[in-house]
Image (cartoon, rainbow, N blue to C red):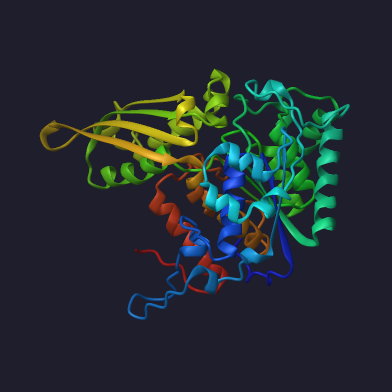
Length: 430
């Protein structure tokens, strides 16, 4: 169903973040700095990007902020949950992502953002020991507590609407089971404390029940199952996911389409990530790593389509490793060795060493997803927003459809959806 012209963005928008860690606090601090004109929100398409409307001859290219009724940065109110009690300023200083002069400039505002107690079951993230957690007799009661948190936050901050972006840790690998197949089965599972229902699913379910759009920034099963899709449609809530596309996978979705476009073959792609933040510590658990590995490994196969191009990609060996290395902190290092071949089968290599900052790359994605999910809700869209695949490593799709991983195809789909919202014709060429 095409989007309707979005309703105006009136009043405050609450941005609720399950997981008030390095990514969330880097995002919040960046928005606060941008409000004051002390820094620019680089990496945010909604703030820095443009949208061509019409033909190249006419070249009407307003900024996305001018073309669409997005909520302004001044109208955002920030809240979140965490399993540790430190406020946003304390977390940001401990994370060490932003320099002291940036944090000092917005210290008072950050210090006022204190996390609500988290819904946490240790079996799903075994490397963390939460001290700031809710108590409940059942997972159904836990959902009820999160719903009350949402209502209270909206009242106390005078916000008219809310969106939620999962910024928490990667959970252990879970495959969809019987409890995930329908709303009735899932709610029965909540009442019975079904072990197949993870902490992140509790947040997602509570948000959907409160008609709060939800995006999943981790590779967890969080909203990627039939019961959640059904509830999102029934409550008319937009959802998106999963797993923020930031460092190494971002590079893959840029490089692989180019190699494929030139019909260059691939024999192997070996990837290693080194990181030392909380995410790295969590991923040091093999079961949490498996969740991330599944998300990362699917990218190349879906882009390259080896079944369609067996001579070029049929024998590709793809391996991914993640190593926890505390001295790096949030400064992630991604190494890629790419073995390719060209004319007459002659071998070549590409080496990539991406010295990136995980939270610096993820923060603008949180901002864009918050604003675009709110925009989608005001445009009458609900259910999975596949046009937001641009932001994710492992995009959710319609049932039976292949995920699109090519960054440039994803970009065109996103921009064409925005064009539809302003009544412009889609563009089918660059």
